[in-house]
Length: 212
Ligand code: SF4
Image (tube, rainbow, N blue to C red; front, side, top):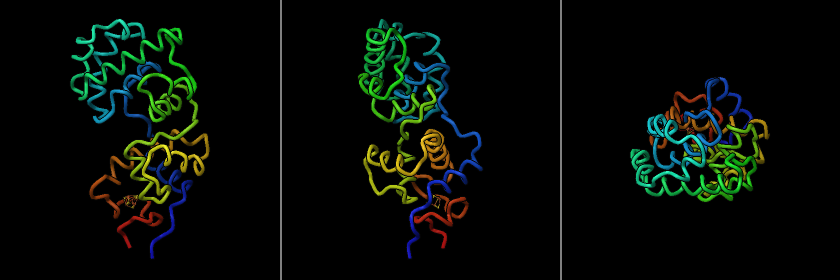
């Protein structure tokens, strides 16, 4: 018989125990840097983004710097992250909007952030939760999506619908950390192919566990 869905609070406390250091693996030192790094992280690894941003953040330090950047030069910096033309356009577009409509400062609300060109709920949640300490929603990336399905926390596939399911079962103050924990676990144990169920601390409560 298939097990019932895992309890979100049990998942949270067990993963917190084994990943006390769970946080974003992107390197940033202010909200603009986190916003740019998050945009660049689409379809690449955090390690690649961190390598690129080491030089990028020295060259471009304000929204106005990105807005005024030579597009080809910006593309050269972003090239290793893949899809670099689109990413350069996205970064420049949101930087212009921040410079023109927000006095150069990254806005602090979901509505204002998602109104920036190319910024969706996932990116907005990363910035709100990590740079501004506001746990409004849950970041649903590919790992959170996969683990939420495997653990039975959501049967949905669309990230925004998964987020709505998670919001109902994860207390507000835990939402940012909850997604960091699922991402850590998804990278290390509950990998896309061949999840390591025998060594997983959730294997007695996970409905997808291969351990009987
Ligand atoms: S590794 Fe296995 S037991 Fe652990 S969460 Fe993933 S599917 Fe469930």
